[in-house]
Amino acid sequence: MQLRDNNLVQLDGGLFDVLIVGGGINGAVSAASLSAQGARVALIDQGDFAGFTSQESSNLAWGGIKYLQSGELGLVRKLCVSRNRLIATYPSSIREIRFFTAIEPGFKVPRLLLYLGVWLYWAIGNFFTRIPHLLSPRDIERQEPVVNSRGGPGGIEYSDAYMVDNDARFVFSFIRTALDHGAIIANYVQSLGSSRGEDGMWLTRARDVISGHELTIRSRLIVNACGPHVETLNQINGVTTQHRHVFSKGVHLIVDRITESPRVLTFFADDGRLFFVIPLGPKSCIGTTDTRVTELPARVTPEDRRFILDNINKRLNLNNPLTEADIIAERCGVRPLVVDADKKTAHT
Image (cartoon, helix red, strand yellow):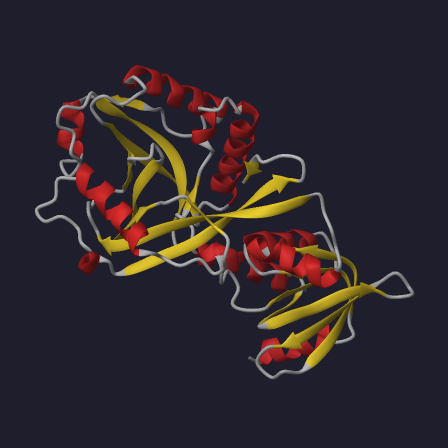
């Protein structure tokens, strides 16, 4: 608390090159990068750092394999390069992990075509990860007997990356880096609105959520890194843009460890989406869903639980099917998808 109290004193009336509002992954990375380059940076968040979307992810750092289907090779290339850079730059936090994909009988895409797809994915990623493999039904039965491969043509195995600890810890590592470079950072500080002063500087009224004390922060620039709450801050500040966000809810269920192998089990759910069983320490993380929502914060519904449990029970050989009684914890976040003003297409 002493560091926070000292930072609150420096925030009030201080002049900064940049004020970042939002302490999720985007705000934290921006603070670390800008402060490392010598900028005087301030960052505030109205709650915990990584307290919203950034703590509700799949804990994966992937190269965008799903965008191959829509032919967005440039995007896949960009995401693969970013993934490779993360693995190389943060080897203790981001590591390669194998994705073990079983294909169901009658699946719409032939196994060999999927195999060619993961080879293309590997090539687009500069062959940075381990080579993909084609899996026979016998391979699946021998390596992952928990997977129900009966009647299926086999599967494929390829690589992406995962977070060794978890997403929130990864975010906080950038908060620490920014602090080390001199950034002034405080959580539980809410922006009440910003306006331009006569000298051209931004004046941001803020409130210490804990004490109720109000302060004024001066900055040359403001970065709105509020994730799903970007529009709320824009409205408070009187800022309009050519874009808006729509929200896609993603739910994961945490259960006792399903398999001891250090792989991500990958399936195609009933709705055609990729569906994962992800190792999470002594537990397994199962999901995810993709449901449009309009209200925040998003909540896990009985339909979400039923969708995940039904899909995983169909695809695993378990002595006893998973039920709601097996759920230890739930993760529920929203993906803020950008919609252009003159289009309906959403972008991550």
